[in-house]
Structure formats: C-alpha cells, structure tokens
Amino acid sequence: MRAAKLTMAVLLALGAFGTAEVLAQAKLPNRPIRLLVPFAPGGGVDVVARVVGQKVSEQVGQPVLVESKPGAGGALAVNELMRAEADGTTLLATTSSHATLPLLSKLPWHPSNDFTPVAGIYSTMMVMPTNAASTSKFKTLAEFVAYVRANPGKINWGSSGIAGPQHLIGERFAKAAKLDMVHVPYRGNNPMLQALLQNDVQLTFDTPTLAMPQINDGRLVALAMTGERRMAKLPNVPTVKESGIDYTAGVQIFVLGPKGLSDPIAALLNKEFVTALDNKEVRERLTGFGLEVAEGRDNTPANLKKHIDDFATTYGRLINEMGIKAE
Image: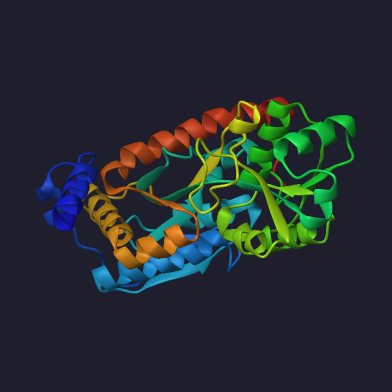
C-alpha cells in the first residue's frame, strides 16, 4: 500500500512535467548538491533542510550540502541561486516570505516565474506565546485582547526581523484584532525568543518548533494558534478564530531551483523530495517538531507556485497599506 501510494504521488507530481518517460531521461551531474538556506544556522529551516537533505543524499547517492546564506532579508541566497547553473545541483530551501521579497526591496524578479518550483517540505501555523511573567495580566487570547485595548501602546511584541513572516503575520493579526501594540524586531529567532523569556516583549508569533520546549516547561504560555484548526501537539490551545477574531495565518517551507531547470531534472528532484518526505523516520522527526509535512499527492510544482502567488497577493496588500520596507 505504501509503495502504491508513493508511486501515485510521484506520478501526480510528474503531471506538471509530462509522463514517466520524462523522468527516465533525468540525470543529475555527478557532484554535490548545494541546498541554500537564507537564514542563520540552527534555525527551523536550517534544521529541517539538513534532515530532509540527508535522506535525499542517500537516495541519489550524492552529497547534499546545506549552506546557510543569511543576509538582505533572504535576497543574498536568492541571488546566488539565480547565478547558479540550471542543472539541479543548486537549490534553495526557503519560506513563504520569498514571495514578498521583490515588493519589499524593489528586486527585479518575480517570486515564482523567475524560479523553478520543485517541492514543498512542510507547512506550519504559528503559535502565539506570552511569558510566565505576563500571566498575571492575561492567560487567554481574549484576556490579552482586552488588556491591549485597555492599554494601547503598552504591549511589545517581537519578531525575528523587519518584513519577515513573523512580522507580516503579526501585523495582520494586530490589524484584524484592532490592537495598538509596539513591534520590536530582532535579528533572528533566538534573540527574539530570549527577549520574550526576559519579558522585553510580551508576545511573539513563533513556529511551534521554536517555542514548544519553553511551552512544555512552563516558561512560556501559548495564548492561541493561527491555523484553521488546533494543533495536535497543543490540543488545549484554541485557534485565534475560536477566540472570536476572523484570522488565520501560516507559512510553508519549500524548495526552488533556478529558472530554466529542465523538465526531466525538475521532475527527478520533485520525486526525490516527495520520496524523502514519505520516509517514516523523516516524517516522524518533522511531525515531532509540530510541523505538517507535505503530502505526496498534493506536493506538486503547480500547487507550490499557487501558494507563492497567493502569499504575494495577500501580504503584498498589507505591505503597501502599511508602507513596510525591508531593513
């Protein structure tokens, strides 16, 4: 059954490229595959890229080298990808915020049309944690909203940087809930988390991977989840919608190749990532982080392109309305 399911998933993925004959023509150059990550080492994307990259390496019999290339809001890694030869040996593992980079920094490329969508890795809602010191003021999202409305400008909320996914998702929440809060950007997830633990900020929008250990040990308290439904790992934490605010948000992590990647190579890479994500050990590790792993039947380049374009439309409006600019 599992083999049949995987075969069907791969064939569906090939729909964007042609028939299985296309795949038979594919062959990667015999050299290491570079998997660029536009964030600092040790972050969620970097960790997941290494887990999935190791399995892909085993499957193709070539090293997959994860290279952290932070800088310019992600544009540094994107520029390196665009300069790379379109032979399948340079890829980019990035987040939905890739879709908004051209809007924020006036970059001369389109987030989907100027790249080759390869495969999704995972999607995640955000958890909205506060710190233990704040629970004397609010223990639920409804209490938090009431407190902020009664104390405009008195609550700080943190993100991992200007115009990143957490910043954009947080601004959308503040707008939906009609809240006056002070945004404090940090340079990365770890400084943001430390600021929350030290009560320098009283709220963040975090990936479950980052916040779960501190939620489990009681140093952080989860007020809400930003998804359509509750998260299995935090079943007692309500969604924002359950708290009466019409709002959902999340991000995807995915793999892109350079523009001009041939159909056979793109099909081969999609197959290898779909296969790696279907591996029991890989899937268990990623779901253990609280992530929703991309399903093979839906993990097509066409669906990935649609996600990128939809994210650009939704958050592009917010960026223009608020005049948000990259650092």
